[in-house]
Image (cartoon, rainbow, N blue to C red; front, side):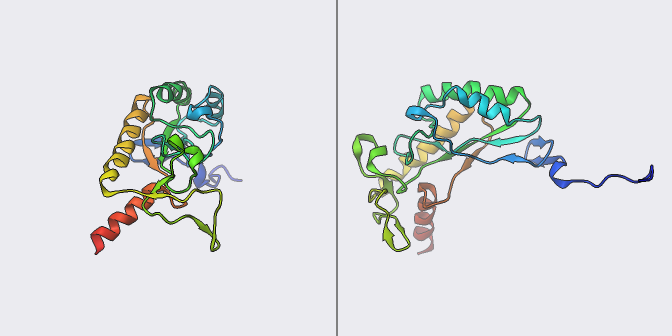
Length: 200
């Protein structure tokens, strides 16, 4: 290689400006739901998990984090609706920020992708529909048929997301809130309702 020749640029390793964030590279830790947040409270071992995956100017997206006690559909997933949960997130966020990382919080409500065992008082999961989940045309037995939300209940779900976003900031500036909107989750269902209402 001559002195004038430059090594090839690897786009993945080049800086990127994402809104107000200057990332040093384009490698992102995607959200990985670990199911190790017992009683929906992040545990101390998450400090090591996230800090080991942090680089200066690197982006990490937290595992799916429930916005309320009705948002749960899987065992031991973290939440951010109680003071205890917010306090548990703080040392995790601090560890990521101490290494120069950018940390986003992914908030979700699973909607009908749940069963009564994860719901307060064993109630049916809430959704935009009362139709159960079907996989390849067959009812999925692990999911309890949901209860359709009433129109007057929708503001409470919206408020749950608002509080979760506020709690994310209180937890130490989990800067941005991504909405998990895959697999028939509540926020996608609510958007579908709003679309149907507005498109009729």
